[in-house]
Amino acid sequence: CTFVNATILIDGPINVTIQNCKFGENGASTSIRITGISKRHIIAFNAGTGYTGEFIYADDNVTISTFVGNVGSSAAANVVNYKAPGGSVATGNIGVVTARP
Figure 1 (tube, rainbow, N blue to C red):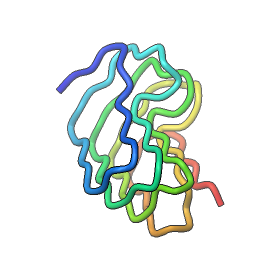
Figure 2: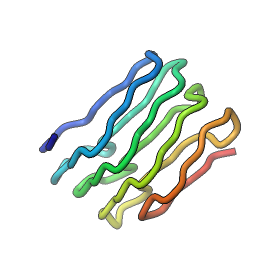
Figure 3: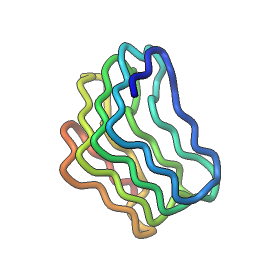
Figure 4: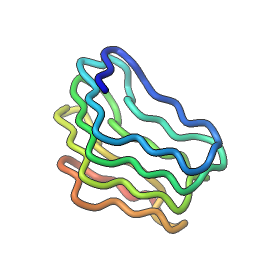
């Protein structure tokens, strides 16, 4: 799937997978935003350009999720920004990954 000028918002559910998607020339600060009390997400093998903040951002209450193989091509900021305590992991991403304490 390909998204242009779009942000996907996951607000609170569990077991959401976003995989093999392209986000182009977003213009928004974030392409994938995960909020609320949510867990067990798989965000994998996505590519993003044109975002101004984080390509993928998970709020502090997002737990037990994995961020793997995502590619961000914006020089603006992070490809993944998530809260490290809580069982979430980020591996194999290309770009800056921030694991907040």
